[in-house]
Image (cartoon, rainbow, N blue to C red; front, side, top):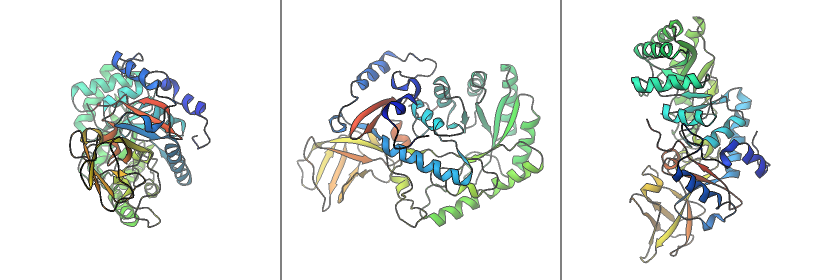
Length: 412
């Protein structure tokens, strides 16, 4: 288990070889460019955070450890588990930490992310997006052949039959969960009898093994105000809860009832049969989540601390009331709300230009000159992480570890 008392040695050991090796899909050797980048990164260990070249994606290790502890303690009271979604960090080293901290497994958004994780030794993977094309289905079955604990999702009868045929051709039995729509109409099958019928089909097909259901309610995660968020979460999952009950009555396997996220981790357990939450952003936090408010009535979401920041350098301070820094849309994404300047007031930051961020002053706590550095809480952590090659782990304002973001760009 992680806690703030972890020694540096134990923390690095828990990542396996990640502290000394670049992990890549299909290989443990890494490309020449990756190795050169990583070797340069190793030389940064011990460097002051404030001496880093920018923009730099920084992770406060103590903050991350605190977030581990918060989620672990909360779930221990409810009896459900964590199945974190690694689309947030795309980093095998962090996935291994999550497993070491008690997670029942991890989630990936795409089969390509699953390939990276499995290649890196993280083999308890639930791919939450259905694989419907022949190419992706073949890739998924190849993963199942190498990783017996790889699980896929399905939301149509036709896809279930395709998966079964491909599994038989590959000589495996593929584990499958039925994806149930919680009302967002993004993916999933209609809850209730249609979902149960699909589950019955999966259970009958020779190439598949039914493991349960998936119902991720993304629409409720960012609702502002805890009571409104709770009411929405429970209402929208009524259909999934009904599906679960019908499957139990039909004698179908319901060992997995997975869903939920960072905004509803302390609500999801109220759904009967719920087994695990797919929290991802809890580890890092961002401006979007900070705005949703907590169960104590605070306007700021205080459950988890912001641990992920982008360090940026001021490039121009020639004009009154403003300055320009080097973290633009290519370093911060264009998601809203705007980034938050850490530790300051009366200062706003916008990252709408490709290469430059705009600092504006309104009765600021301080102003900046050329060469000064400032830290930014990112708008939305998932797409920001996908812009970088590595995460720089910081403790006591010094670089402690460099982790490759090995699944960066894996969107297929």
